[in-house]
Image 1 (cartoon, rainbow, N blue to C red):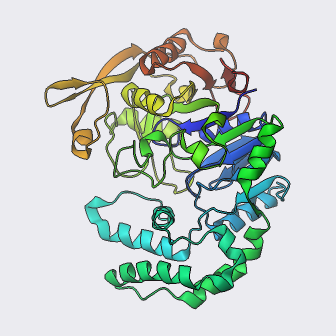
Image 2 (tube, helix red, strand yellow):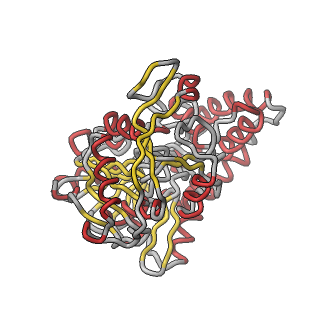
Length: 429
């Protein structure tokens, strides 16, 4: 039985929550391996809706759920999210939930810095969620982070706090803000420490134990490949690596364990916040996609920008992340359109490109080359087999997989878990 790594193959918001939930019901362990509390995964189970932004999706079904060392953790948000789920009847304890003890913490100073920078950036805004995730990653690589394991040694935190405050006090002064209140920060950490530490452990050890026992591990990515700090539309990206290879470094299991790489792909394209978007539709069709697809960010509530499917971007994402197969979501949002378009290439300065360039100016100036297909008047909503789909919808799906050079493994036709067409079982691959 294979392990499975799930990533978004666009700019996030591809519908990973539903797919991960569907897979989690068949996995033994679910691991978050990067990002912070900005994942925005909505799960619909029966008549209940769960909205997660930090906890792994397996927690809803009682599957062992782990936050790996590649995640940056806001301990106060963690407590609030756990309490909300417990209020919905979800049981969370040491048996089904663990946090890597070497996981860096998101602190109030990180949230402060995130907000100050965005407010001062003007037209250069990146469009962060303002949750302190980027600054927390900066402190991690700057070797001044406070980690989960430090919560058990707060009396010895002095030298680490000196390094942290020396950095942040200088930045805060530049924004006209007072220095970090060290005593207040320590007091907040002392208060939250017992709650977090009850779940802390060397999760790499636990994961290696379950691996040896033959457990099926599901690695759950956040955001999408196009937001990867190396491979995405820089600088309009997140602060972590969102590609599949991060599942190894962000969990402690190693690259041989990542298994089947499932790329989640929306049947059209959306983006939240700033940054280039070649196929964006600022017309009636774009508005229709947004309304039918309920395109508002789970975490921020921000309206998503909508456009036609971009095969160039998805093909590039699949290649970079070694995607084995894709899960195509929200095909039903295209129901009823007379014509649908797919971007198959770009024009830039008189040249035709079959890839997305790295420079921001080139990314902003590419002109999409479209292939137009007939739409379909029947409905795909709720379909659970190919026979339930209109013929033209099947043609569209087949054309998508041809253009991205990656086969379709799953097709999702509604937010409901069971409304899924299984073409290729990732866990049996």
